[in-house]
Image 1: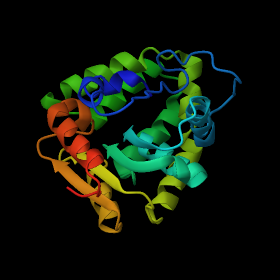
Image 2 (image 1 turned 30 degrees about the horizontal axis):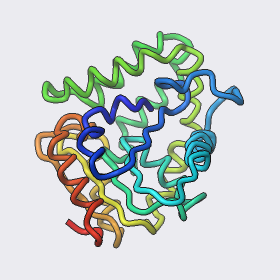
Image 3 (image 1 turned 90 degrees about the horizontal axis):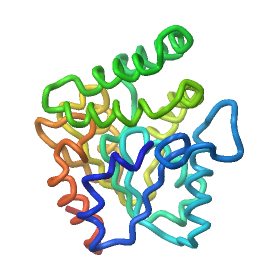
Length: 238
C-alpha cells in the first residue's frame, strides 16, 4: 500500500510519463483519511484512488500494480474503465493456493492473539522465503510496521471479499491491454498467473527466472526495461 514499493521505478519512468503515486489509506502520508470506516472493502480503496484521479482531472492513464493491487485494478476497471489505457501488474494475484488460504484464515483467527507485526513477519517469510528475496522482504516489513493495530485489523477485514473477488475476476475477460510480470519463485501466485493469462487475449505474461513475488524490486532494472517498452510502444506487444 505504500509508494515506497515503487522507489526503483520513479527515476526510470519520470522521463517518459507524468507520475502519480498513491499511498493507500493508512500507508505513507495517507494517514487519518476521512471518512473513517470500521472495516475496509475494495470499493473503499478504489474510492480513495478515484478521488485523487478526479481531483487532478486525469482522464486516461496507464496503471501499475503490485501484488493485491491487481485486484484493486480489476475492480477499478469495472467501475471506471474509461480511465484505463494499459495495465502493468507485477506479482499479480489471480488465485490463491492452499498456502495463501491457510495464512489468511490464520490471520483472521489470530488477529486478536498475536501482535500484527508477528503476523506480517510470518507473512513475508511465507511469500518471500529465499535469500534473494531479502531486499523485498525487508521493505515489506519496514512499511507494514508503520501501520498501527487498528489499521492492520481494518485491512485484515478485506478477507471477507478477497477470495470471492479472485474467483469472479479469474473468469472475466480482461478488456484492457495488460502486461503481467511474475517471478518463477513466486510459489503462491505463479501458477495462477500462467493460467489466467492463457485465458486472456489482451494479456502478455513475462516470467523472471530466479525471482520472487516482488519482481519490481528484486529485478527492478529488467522490470523497468520491459514495462517501459510495453507502455511506450503503440501496440501492446513485446
